[in-house]
Each structure stands twice: as structure tokens, then as C-alpha cells.
Length: 297
Image 1 (spheres, rainbow, N blue to C red):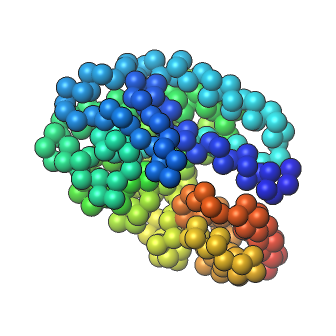
Image 2 (cartoon, helix red, strand yellow):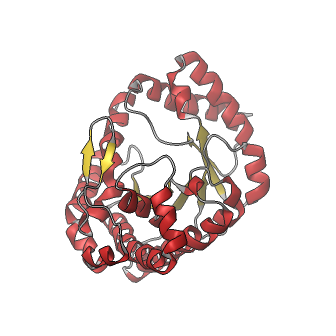
């Protein structure tokens, strides 16, 4: 499997975080140049009645599990397969905003004006995510990552009230669900973009790995989370617009800053559609090359 082919394996799965919302009865369309769109967003508390029973989500998404199993078989052990899902707060923002937003003002309005309904919605999403993630492991996923991509729109108080409890609950219940199903535990990763104010809390939320975006200095992150938690990240995705030579230099510096212990090299967020797959490959190659040198030294 070449490096470009490996990139293409991962790329089409980017819309997967919205599949549980479809299973809950939300219509989701992908608009070219705009991204996800929800034609009928949640506007009032009574709109929660439109949502289906979260207990049915896993059965509705059986086709996802079949795709994971097929992918695992075709990878044939060449690389690990990571399952993933959006975290409850991030999913809530799309359901209320009707798509992406620069401010998340409508979703945050719910938190202030409808706190009980907000918690009800977040519980529904958590109830849907747990069997979805357990099902991904049963289908062949070897690790799980939860994306709280919109953490940065919340300050510490709102994050601790409306995001962190559900992040913790997902980890606790997924681990219990795997045990009940007779499945081996898998590493779980939490990534909260712009959530640098909550690194200590995330490190104690029940996940083996904490993902970092590029705004966090590796040395400071390590000091804050301690030595028992693995860190993942955190090259600025826009660095992939640089030359392959400069990408290599940036990767070398990143690896040096994190050090060789309890660290997974990654970008600090997702890829953009106009990025050259060859530059993604250059990033992967540089990680392998400089990692070997770092371990030898």
C-alpha cells in the first residue's frame, strides 16, 4: 500500500461523525463548498420529540460496521484501524445550528436558555454514541477517537457543565460495554480542539490518549497532563502546504519537542480538501524517518 493510497483509505470516512444523527432521524446533506447541512435543525425544546430512540442507532448503522469489517480485512494488518465519532457537544452544535457556525451562538443559546433540554439532548447523543463505538470495535476497529471539535466555543465553566461530563460518560460506558460484550479493551483517544483550558480534566476523563491541536506547546502540555497519559498531535495542518523539505523539518522539531515517550505523531486537526496527498505522504514518511533516529539516540 503506497502512501497516497493510504491517504485515500482514510479520506472518504470524514463524514462518518454525522451518521448517528441520521440514525436519530436528522436529515443531513453535504453541500459542496459549505459542508454538512441540516435542513430541519432543532429550534425548540419540543423538537427533541422528533428524535428516534437512541437504542435503535446501532442497528440502523449496521452498514457502517460491515464497512469497518471489510476495511480491516483489506488492510490485512498493514496499519491499525481507528474508529471514531463526534462528541455529544459537537454533534449538538450541528443539530441546533443547522450546519457549521463561526460563533455557535444558537447552540450556546440553548445552554443558557434551555439547560435542562440541552442536558436531555446530550444524554440522547451519549446513549446513541456508546453502542455505536462498541459496535465499531466489534466490527474490527482497534482504537477509538472521540472528537470534541467545538470545545473552543465553550469557556471552562460551560465546558465543565455541558461537555466534560458526557466525554467522561462515553469513555466509562464504552469500556463497560466492551467488557460486557466479551471484547478486548482498545485505546481511546479524546481530542478537544481549542480545549487547552481543560487539559488536566481531559487527562483524567478515562481516555488513554489526549489529542492536541497546534496551539498547545508540547512541553507545557506534558507538564500539565503528567507522564502517564499519551499525547497525540500536533502539527498545524496548514504546514502541509509547505514544501516537502520544510514539512520534514517541521516534523523533526515536533518530534523533538514531544520526545519519544507516550507520544503519537499526528496533525493538530483534520486535512483540507485542497491538500496534496503527496504532502500528506511526506508528513508520514518524515514521522517514520525522524522517529527511528530519535529512538536510536
